[in-house]
Amino acid sequence: MKKKNLSQHNSAPTLKNKNVKIGIVVSEWNETITGALKEGALAFLSESGIAKNQIFVHTVPGSYELPFAAAALLDADDSLNAVICLGCVIQGETRHFEFISQAVANGIMNVSLDYGVPVIFGVLTCDTMEQAQERAGGKHGNKGVEAAHTCLKMLELQQKIN
Image (cartoon, rainbow, N blue to C red; front, side, top):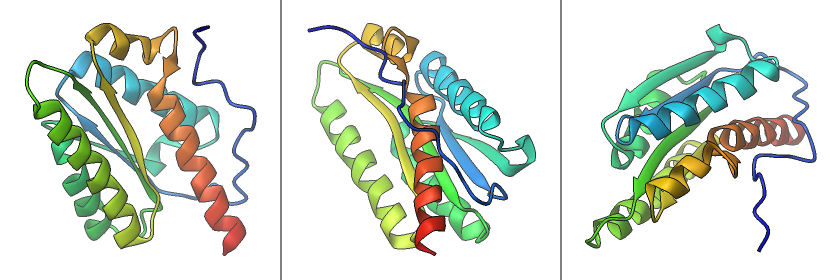
């Protein structure tokens, strides 16, 4: 199987109105990886014309806390247009990985549906640290870039629908 950079996209987001506010919540657990995801997301947003003062970055201890933080941000600021959740869960020797990954995925989806706002799943769920590194700026691209791209594409969809 040929390895490819998963962060390459065929279509760039074309927001009609770039006056948006985007929250980013980043897990501190596996900080080397999540820091790279954050930097990738910020760089993509900047390259797409989103100003620094339109982006609000917050940290949480681990990926499990991402859904709560996304909901708290949306509760605190009803003018927030989207939230990007960035984290990294790496398989260990116990089933803890399964519980955390499932809870985070479901939690992020539920926040998005409950608030009617794009809440983007930018959480790596990898078997090894090497796999995480490959997806945080390595040979498979940067999932933070992908999450930011998804965020802008979802905002573009909302603008078209509204």
